[in-house]
Length: 458
Ligand code: NAP
Image (cartoon, rainbow, N blue to C red):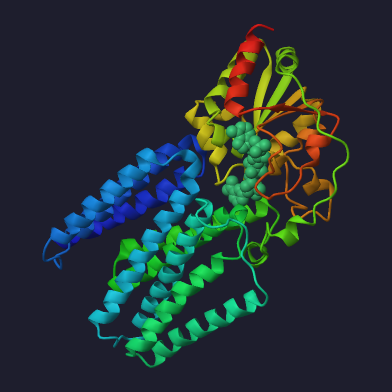
């Protein structure tokens, strides 16, 4: 009876994970998808707790208590802007757990495992170990604990590849000739080191892609754990996690017109790549808040283009209020959303959804770009790289070919930012020097709040 319950809960959990992922593919169904996946995880945990191999629940309850407190604290206190590093930390924990399970299984069998089992276990431990240290370094870079720019040295890629080859070599040897503890731990140690070396040359701007890739590794490590433990739900969940992470990495790379190899080995954001930017002509034109308010109040169509600055300023509610007062005056308001605006996929969608901006007002890059020439005012709110015309016009730019929101084709552009700060790529943005562009300096939330009042009195 018990075994049927376990099998049923695992089957239900797997179906819920798949439905959850499907829900996450659209902002309107994302919340429901998340709840389905959460319920799926609960079913998987309940099923696992029913296993008759469990002799005592003491350590399980201690783990549950520690995990719940840590998870609750992270959910309540970590701000939205720190979500990427929070995710990196959870990947590190998940991957470390997979590595530890693999190590304990190796011990349990005294290292004498069937080749297929050793293959799955080695894969699990190797991916788990490198994802642990890689994710911890990603966390440290994003949190500003270590320098975010790429750390490079001569012959780095060759050194890293050699280290990886040695690690994989030991792994293959252990499959053929099992049982050597020293070799097994050398492999584990090298995998931990390789994780650090893999992330070292990657700049913070590329970190979301790397994290999604590490997420994919952590998922595959869990799937391998499932094979080792003969646990079906772990195999299914791990595989879903592994492949969705990989697809997400590819989508992000596509949105930046970069290849995975360029992200992993290109040291993007280092002095060498940033130096390739073009020289700027002219100067930036500062505009007054009252003038912009009048321009907005009497416009036919306004497009808001949010970026990372909207997230740091937490200006999502203020932009919604401005949209409301403009719409009351008969202005058509739309939002142009770039797939890599902000610091994580869907960042802008999540923030705007929090402020109850209707999904029907959000437009993807391909939909909104043809609309800019008929737009009276494009309001860029804390966005920089995603509206950088160099990506389209300057083949020598490090971001050449990255699709952008073409705000510079609008009749007028207003950029809301605090000062002369660069975008995450560290590049100068020629948009700010164009005659069509006016700069409105200040914190985005503060500026938008003042604009709301000024538009009401215009
Ligand atoms: P961005 O290029 O990083 O620019 C953000 C701008 O916001 C800065 O120029 C900054 O200028 C301004 N800002 C910061 N705080 C502000 C505040 N409180 N109020 C007003 N303005 C503020 O942002 P983005 O255009 O969204 O581009 C995202 C970047 O991240 C791209 O390079 C993208 O490739 C990269 N990336 C994103 C993802 C993803 O999944 N979303 C993944 C990989 C890479 P001031 O300092 O002058 O205010």
